[in-house]
Length: 317
Image (cartoon, rainbow, N blue to C red; front, side, top):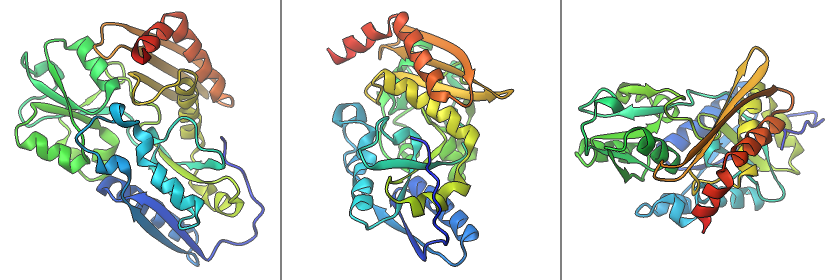
């Protein structure tokens, strides 16, 4: 859903941001808080830190316990009961269909959308010896890794960024794959040994972008958030989310979708794969930046025409 403008004449006296308490989530919330304080110096902006179910269950992969929506439900409850005015999310963690009565009020400018190769011993994926253990929490990454490097051993990896890096440093993995955006936002760019190109690892839907969610009836909040909205990023991620929504995508489905603005047009690529990487279909198209959802749906249709439906049916069967 697109942001809705409001005619509210004056800024609110107080805004409360709901956020997970991980270091990355708090960085994101503090970033938005500081921008709002600069825009509205008369408004008191604070953060309500919360622990979500997704943060509490760390010994089971997200694809087995209900997906990334577990990171946002408690925050939405805080919005619904008035404890917070809006929530800041990593957009790739936001389910493709929001609960009734909620809206993405603004989409922030995208950080680096790519995946990052992190290792203490090796320069890149191609340098890993056969049998090397690579950690990732993503079926999307796993399917692409298995397709390109069948000689590697892919193992699940959960926890916040610091926990994942600690597990790497303890020697549990030869390498791990993380979102470049999170590492850069946390000042950990030195841990990146290589950025993985989108041709080799197509990013997740919404990766690198921030989504700001609030109740749809909060026109006053929506108006105040509009200066944070980045139209080009929004067009890209709306196309990506439309593709994923049309395919019933979630973290239980190995799929990727990535759109870019190119000479006033949107270029988008998408894929669906089996977890083992043995079956993979890809599609690419360009479209009107003013109608990003149409491009996303067209990519989804092209993937289905190549057999994405059969792959998805096998995953759900």
